Amino acid sequence: MHVRLLDIAHARSGDKGDTANVGVIALKPEWYPVLREYLTQEVVAQHYAGQITGAVQRFELPNLGALNFLLHGALDGGGTLSLKTDAQGKVFSTSVLRLVLDVPDDVAAAAGLPPAPAA
Image (cartoon, rainbow, N blue to C red; front, side, top):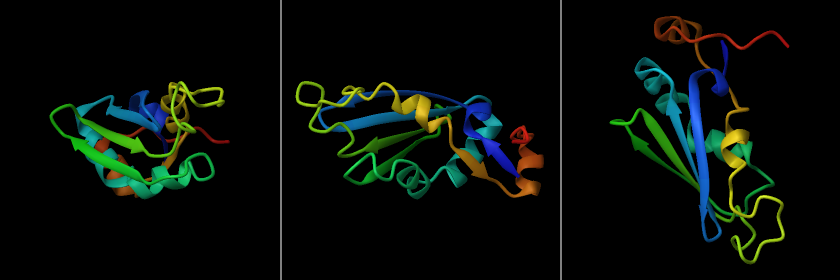
């Protein structure tokens, strides 16, 4: 089943130098295991391919039902050096929510995930 991240999570982002920090928080506690399993650093790195020059790191925050991603080389040197429109990484949270996860039907049904609307 295709599941839009927008339908199952909140997100916040910001910056520290040339690294964007993106937090993804499950809207329901039962959806956190789905995020943990299917929102991998590889999926996030692929989503931002061509926009960042460094690695993606992922940190799990189970007590918050959240994942945190560091996007290295995302800000063209950082807020005071960058000529990018979003030099402080605020739009990365909106962008990550555009991801669509492929979740097996049985896992999606067990977690009560909403399916992505038909295109």
